[in-house]
Image (cartoon, rainbow, N blue to C red; front, top):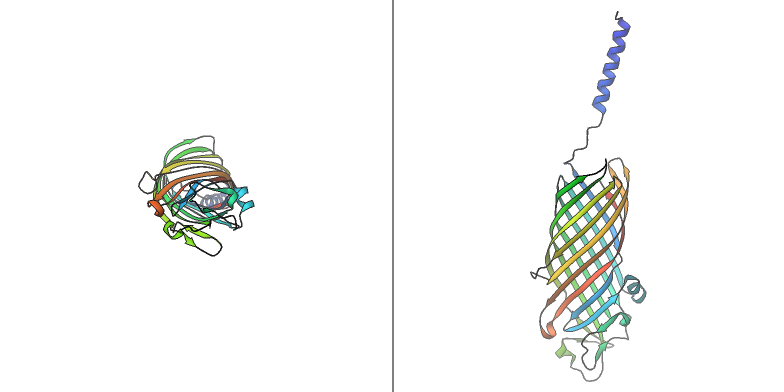
Length: 290
């Protein structure tokens, strides 16, 4: 037999259950916007050559050599990505200023009476701005254990380059530096490329693997240029990220390795300026996801 007290207890329990259901968070929307950004350092080593006013020097130095031999080094790097469902957008910014002393560069085709300066701390200074932006589309996904998956994204975008190079030269004897397009100074002369700007199309693939919600691995490769701006450009990068999860966001650290190559030339004769370099080295930084 049901008593009044029993009815009141059941009613109270039902009310409490209803309130519990209403207060339970709903399942995360798989199509909600997801954002991630990172600030990172790229310990850039350089191999290849630079041409300024027809004067070409070969460069081959790892990051430690650049740091040890240069009094001119600075950099800024940052990444941002926004995703919704299978579609995403990203941008990556690299700005760096590197200096190389005479021991790190060699004059490819020296002009009689002209040599790479040994009287300055920096024989070659180059500044590079690299801005990349584009779209992402997830073309395949494999669900592994709970909280783990593997996905492949197609990448389509563009990469903007700005490069300036100043080559410090010593001039010996009566050399007509004006005919070579070289600016003559008191202590040394300078061959400047005047600043090069170009935009390359970029096409690539990205592999993402989530070991756990806190551990991620990303491997990406792309090619670009195709003779439309640079003759050819390519990139390979691998990054491991570990993040600590908080309510609504995650903070993490990242390590990896990046290699970026480009071959670009403009002008002819003494007006030839160009970049044929591979930039490579480890990455380290921190990220936030929300």
